[in-house]
Length: 282
Image 1 (cartoon, rainbow, N blue to C red):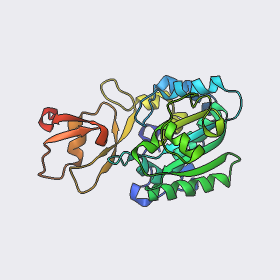
Image 2 (tube, helix red, strand yellow):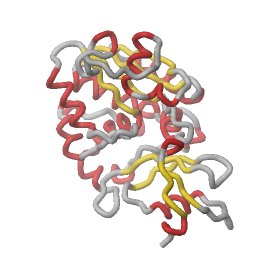
Image 3 (cartoon, one colour):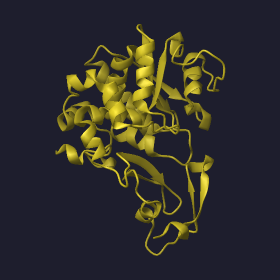
């Protein structure tokens, strides 16, 4: 398959179920060794931003931890997805778990992590089963240490400090006191917490590079993103859109024939109203 059409959700149909390690490797091949060594600089060059809500530059986040620490760190794969209106992360985990784990392994190599903790919302049953199967497959072929931790149900459980607090102490409340996670997180080790979509994108960037990443996007934006569109149809739909796609185009993609929309809320239940939909129609 040409790298120009590779995307996060490329591959078997989503309703085909979890992609095995063998199928994943046959479809995408291994992560190039050179890209794995240079992944931080590559992520900085692409300008990839985190897809967990905060939008912090991924390359900058990885470099800060890599340059701070010379011993054993930890990586947390954040798939808690506690936002009730979002289904993008659980969809990606259920269908493409090994793309996420590729990114986690890259992150572990970049920051010197001895353990990867896979943190998945316990209510996301298909995603949890897929990630558990993927972790078991990885354990059979690698020395990398993986640990799967089901996250408790709750919006705040996916916040980075809450995730680390739960992994350490079984308490999913955010922490506001020092030290920072980059200094002491899981087990007292410096810790990188990264959203599953961000890690999956890192794995594709490592394979296909900056030019590929910038081949998608509109009006000066680069790359794609997973979005959940709900409320206009029988069930929420997860779409992979080019960044810069107009809102009216995204909404129209999911509208049943003959149905209209009065208003749009952006960002889920804790987001903001975008005004009347007619304002977005061009």
